[in-house]
Length: 208
Length: 244
Image 1: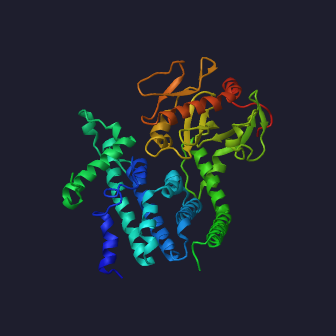
Image 2 (image 1 turned 135 degrees about the vertical axis):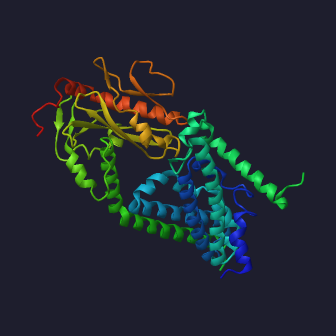
Image 3 (image 1 turned 180 degrees about the vertical axis):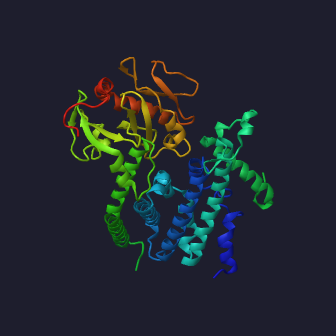
């Protein structure tokens, strides 16, 4: 089930081949949804699900897809899955669907999806494709959660909406950094994570 | 079979689109009743939120029937024009605000302490899409008792925070009418004051356009109710024999 190669497919995207940190994909949604921790987590889960299943579907029909319209086929598969998720959420969990509102639609435009479908699912069997989807989804979700954690903590002084920085600190002059809840700080936070990541993984450093 | 021939591609695309279309249409049809029910319940909850009542999905319908004792449409003179059952609930605010002659729905509520509140729906534009809400007014026709706001697609953590209690609570106790004239409640940047002398609340930092949208929405929608609010102020109850 988990051969050595499959293990690499599953775990490489977590660090050495992380879609956000190394391939610099999916940055736009990383900026948009990470002002709070909770939407970051839900967005991460949604992307894992859509990525895994679209990978499997494309992999199943990969031998029938005409090469010149393959992008259209991929888009149709992804969009169909996303709309299905959205409709089911409205019908069965309306509160969550309200919270997610725009994010669900944003999944369609996530570059990681197209990237994985093109680079992996078109050339591999369904099981490895499924693992690849899970792995890349997790790699993306992990970065989202880290960024969301720091932005909510420093920007609002809360986590999951609960106050974690004690009133004591505010009394002594501590202030929330309002800049952290604005999108540019997500970019800078991601850059800091990339910095730490490259410093720890020498083989990723470019020689200039 | 040649996968790159024109006919194969056209047939492939056509079959795919038909299959996907049929699948999505089927899912939509199958889920529609549940979705409509959820949306109606969500609207009921939003209305109850304006009078600070939180209900569970199971008791929502009963609570709504219990607290909202009457619904009507008022006319330009502030008189009750129509008080059929569910007449206010059935008004679709989205199309209503575009009409030249708007319907003016009012929900009359009686709380546990027997005080009477009037809930007025409002609808406007945020940054990315529509925002809407409900304003509960005391029987004096001016004091805001509570508000609830909702949005379709505002940015989470920024504009979407108009739904949070901290923002909503600022409106409590503000006066819609000042010195006999309707002024609405303005939303201004923190630290600033209203230039027109109206009551004001703080905007959400980082969400200027959504905050401004809330202020504009309150002014634009509630100004039509001015005659109604005036009548309330004069008599502490809405006028005309149709009610009760």
